[in-house]
Image (cartoon, rainbow, N blue to C red):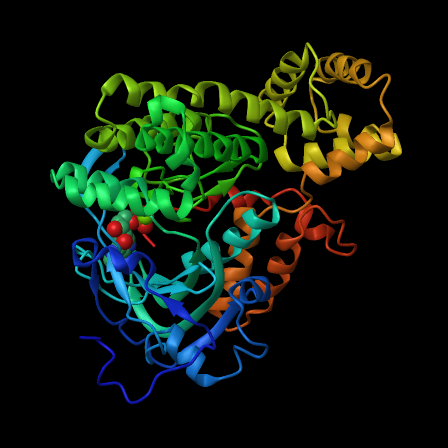
Length: 493
Ligand code: AMP
Ligand code: MG
């Protein structure tokens, strides 16, 4: 029986819904209702996501929509649920986790799942309160849209809605909900869950569902003797490799790459203590709780591979042969470096590969690391130099001038025969002017906590088109202030 059967009132968002993931049945989820947040208000909205969802114009004007997105009204046509998954956290098997505070409304006819993150306790909340604080919700909202603006696969965020209801963390904070949107929120951990519990029928049903919906080419593959599950593992591994290449090229540190935070679609998912690097430090650890540096910036590609091994282990009963499973992961080792090199070449304004490119890339990364040079500013200034020939703003970033000059010589030689204007164009499309630095997020958050949400909107507009110049917004593209390094962000949010 529908949980909504007795409802007399529901908010009609103007969307049509289909069963989607819920069709897998009760072994995979628990139907439940969000817990209402009192006196909700809007904090931020992404019209781009609203359009993608197909929401009608003026969708946010109705109080019923605001109430529905903060759990006070059901959404017409939906039967909300929380899904069950397990995972490895910080390298250790953590057992069952599940959506502790993300409540899925359902899937739209257009094929997008919609979740309310922070909408209350679920059977998978363990000790948690099922809430998300305003601070981390703004960070997730802005970063989802920033990643999309950068062309990096990610879950999206329609909006953040807040409430003055208290949430108890290290201090008392206020509550918020992020309405998240993605083709699928399935994680590696969903597969690990059923494998660990030796529930092979469910494991197979889940794999079949994900393959049929999102990886249909794996059905007609000749790879691995037509083994669709092995082909699926290989496809996930390649998408993950491509994602990691993008993270590393843009200087994004995720912070909590547990297997339950790994999307089966190769999307960036679960924004917690993430950080875009300021000064380039390959060993940077952005998560205050990550005392061993397991998820340090330069560890991410290896961690993703480790996580893919966990997925392979989980899929083994379906793949049927350990050697085949291991072979399905092999291409990660070529896809990641190829993709990374391609991304870095684009940052250098080089559309085609040539011998010596790897040395050029490694050379500049070494210089940046040695001088802890601001990663985003360096690349943008190098792009501008290509356009206007003014070298000083780039050179000024380095204390080791001879080192930089030597590198620049090889860079210039590599570009000797190139059309500089075209190279500059490629560089400006590959090197963002705006990234969501911690201090920018923090300023918007502090204003929002005082009920001024304009900073969220301003940042959103810049981050959605981060390669544009945005005249007048240079203050958002500058060096971080000294206090930025004192911001401590941990898993608790
Ligand atoms: P995360 O560290 O955010 O990836 O979360 C790990 C697990 O803890 C997931 O199952 C989350 O749904 C759950 N979780 C995190 N925070 C809370 C919370 N405040 N209340 C309930 N569950 C939570
Ligand atoms: Mg998570």
